[in-house]
Length: 424
Ligand code: SF4
Image 1 (cartoon, protein in one colour):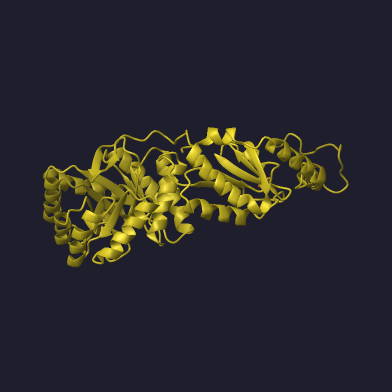
Image 2: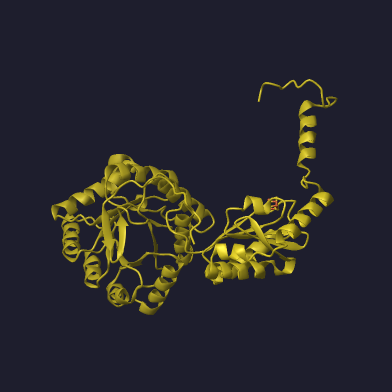
């Protein structure tokens, strides 16, 4: 059930390629990628991880093909995989050829590591004959030393030049089934490199901040880089490179695309207030309980957990469903309309049960089934809270008066001339 009608910038046009049944570039939805951490030769463990990644939102999965046993593993993995498989190749041309023989849906070549022109042309010609796309995976950390020297470091221009040189080899054998990445672990460099790549090439771009590190820092860095570019309309497929279970990468990628309105919501979008002095419940605990119960049931709704009834239902009125706490009771609301008032210890179970009913029956049917006295009961709670604590439970008005007194200095009072007038 989609809630986002607004999306970020119009995507910059790129050519379209196909990895198996997944289109990348052109008008295809931005796809999510991740990479297995198992030994590719361990077929069962790798298949298990691929299924976990696909379940978490990965559209395409990459596996390393670094040795003969890995290539043999790929031959057994590819037919059983629920998503297209890309083989990651660094130094050995034989591994690229073996991966193609294994039936992979895509290759990733690192131009900094596989450098001999005749080998690059050979792999491109083999990929061309089989209709298998190649990603030119430039990486600031493994840039060709010659380019490093020529450009005085891993600059955006150097990264794009590396991709351009690889493309020139591909051109020689008439191979154009390509996507490009120009990754760096430095977010600012990565953003500039992709902006330049977007102006230079019309091939689809695979976005990523390489070696972003463990969460939460890694998530912040990867999101800063990827989201900035997506918001500018740049990027056709993305990968979070986290030092974590790759399932987290896939989940983060999917959540980012859903948050930006670039993919339809498949999973839960839990919004919760940050809590404050008005909160009538432990918002963090209730939000966590609700998140785990709703995720377990794969509820595809935007659901709000709000700490008080004073601001909660209003601030979360766009959510499909929500609950706000007030006077030891929870006010359950659908699209901002109170439909039920439940005891505090039943808040999470009521929320989950209503979410399941919305998924089964639809929002309109559940709005029609609202308890007739719910709005009145909720209004009474709100009024009592105002009576007990006042509308300004955080004493913000008193604080502002105090600050004003402080700024005016000792001896100055309400009504004194405001010496700072006109300066703000
Ligand atoms: S919803 Fe209520 S408790 Fe939560 S941050 Fe807003 S005012 Fe505070």
